[in-house]
Length: 195
Image 1 (cartoon, rainbow, N blue to C red):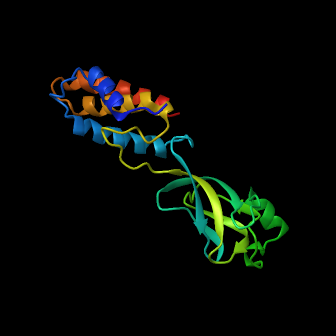
Image 2: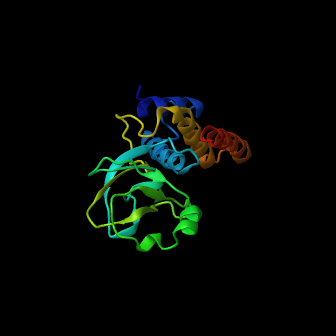
Image 3: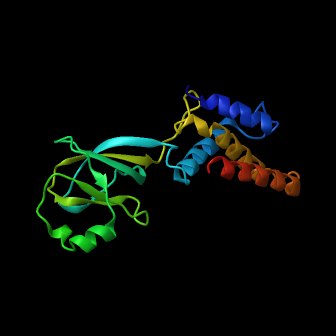
């Protein structure tokens, strides 16, 4: 079931004791919800917002994910043949065939991924320009609207509420020490919720 943005904002407003949006306007809460979705998507979990797409290869082994990508989850197949592509370890292939990057082009069989370079991966054998490979990746969510649903997985709805309340309490300066303590508690709950 899709979680509505309105339900998230209403629950956050109740926790902020501002259901009439006197102190925090609904548009501001929506901005924080969208910030929260991006924070969740960039977090440690790889299931918050996952997309599947076909990418067009460039010549060589190094391939780049779409612009909205955060990190690679999987390379599924060579689209033209339907052949599966399997993840392989750099060290193993380098030890067996150190010149693999200079091999002749062909249908993708293996892929290599280094999390230190999250938006790129390598494919063996090297690819000719214009082939198509199906990938699964974590993506940066766009902005949700008040009348729509959240973009990330529904399982993070409570975390989004915690994030919105954290932001609201961080902004409130009426009783700074009490509000900061409460904001910190909601931020910790947010961090626990996203893993």
